[in-house]
Image 1 (spheres, rainbow, N blue to C red):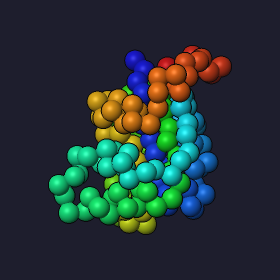
Image 2: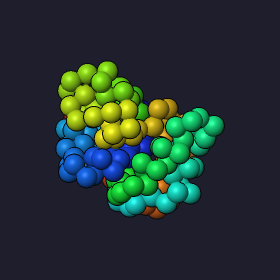
Image 3: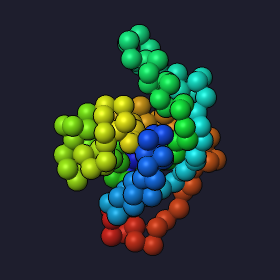
Image 4: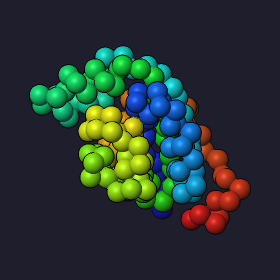
Length: 149
């Protein structure tokens, strides 16, 4: 069964020109890109994005970093997409992320870890709704889709 997940390349990933590398990895895995935007986030949306961390001492740093430059928001679709993307991203702490994952290969610190992805299908729905309207997301069939299911 196919599901959708939210992915954001953070300002350090955009600044280091790693957007294409992230997209390449997800495409090669067989996931389908159904939504894509680039923007500098305002403080309001950043605070909503990180609302579960609002009472934590590092909340201000999270918001400050994610609003510090352009980010790329994406919606990816495929079987067990949330778990697949999380595994491909690697551990949040890039020093503990496996080599071969995006964070293991490119991350520099807990904050500068290149990429964000939803941690559950419920979180994916909430985060997708923060950045995309329903008509922003495409439904289409890839030519190789029958090989990837």
